[in-house]
Length: 298
Image (cartoon, rainbow, N blue to C red):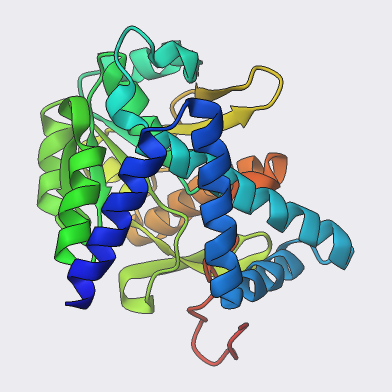
């Protein structure tokens, strides 16, 4: 019953916001996210703790300002997701424009597949959606939601216009996609349990990080292309920015290479977060898993 009620509430909100003019939809999305924050104050506490860990030099008021920007960013993205059914190849440029697309083209032309390295920054849900509308559908690594009704709903929205779902733990599928020369987007800035990740620095603190991108890239020679969809307040649009393909570190020690490359991928994400701190998901307990013997940070 609970799952059905959650689904019904989500469906009503999506349809309601999706029926509004875009400016009103954004205002509604931001309001809904703030309501969620008020009902779940733990999110704010986690966000402030993360900002304290990442920016110890900043004042409490400065961290609070960043966190308020995060909720605005999340609300803006939520509204755009509700508006997905309205967008087409003809009007997608009204919300998302490319920057550095030639970097993606060069990587794809190698024919060995592209691992689209990204994180929970800006409007990550718009990245694959807009890319597919521009004629470049890709695979999206997803973790199934506990609520099967919500899982089907989110997959339906995420796979519009040709995108495909790739199960998060389905490494063979990811490798197969690379062998076919396809593109798969991977969010690799979330906390992992120790058995599923490696520890690398993130804001100077050891963070357990998914190593799959490094392992697949080393195995298949796929190109790793960082890409983020960032809100540009001056343009009043999102920029889907692609960086040049990254150079992999290869030695005779494969496991060391996995850690080294995971570290450099994570450094790219950190650099972007430092540039746009009010657009990253600070409410996630990124440093929850600790190296053996270390006390928890939350």
